[in-house]
Length: 275
Image (cartoon, rainbow, N blue to C red; front, top):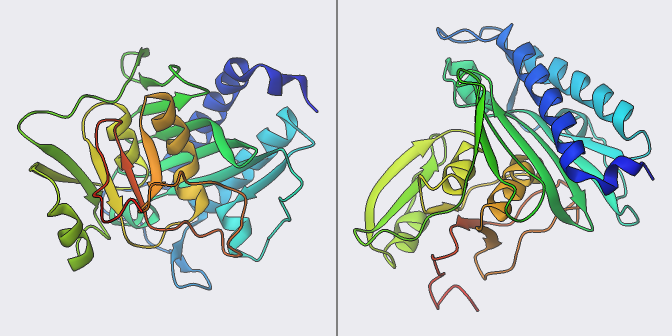
């Protein structure tokens, strides 16, 4: 096993560089007026050359750093790659371009996501939004940071206490509505709702800019793992609707997550859900 796995802060710094390099590659294909030439995957979801080229770059870099670890990337998985992870202590989960619909529409709310999973839990995560020039990273409790490219400065981030005036709810631009979400939110005092694309929704909670992100639409493990590591390190949680922490490792053959609630430590689930 690579010695670097015993030194997660050093490994995180290497992964940050990989994420920025991959993000810069996607900018070669990004156009604020919209991307032309997207293809459809077998499940009907869109894919672009930017997704594919970024995953190739990330996979090569991770193999150079940890040659013995398996890598599960969204694009490889969409082509049918389904490794058996049951005996793997460590593996990588990669979404080279989370928020492809945002990318295609010309929105900057897309991210590069790289997560290291140990014993089914994300222990290192890097999320980079290249258009915004913002990066989130963490490798354990209390290590969550946000780095801004324009200032080249980073700062520690933490979830916030619930404001007296009510919660800020973050929801998906593409999947942020529905009766189930409305019914769930009836249990809470809501100050406002904001919409963001990709894993930036989870990172906004980690950075203390929002309080909860309920997700009742489909997501895959590579969509959440990196931001999950950041949120955990900042003092928050991602659980299923019954309060069980999300785990990773492909127990679902399509790597699908259950419905989940990302939230700060002060936000409780309704008693009817937390059973």
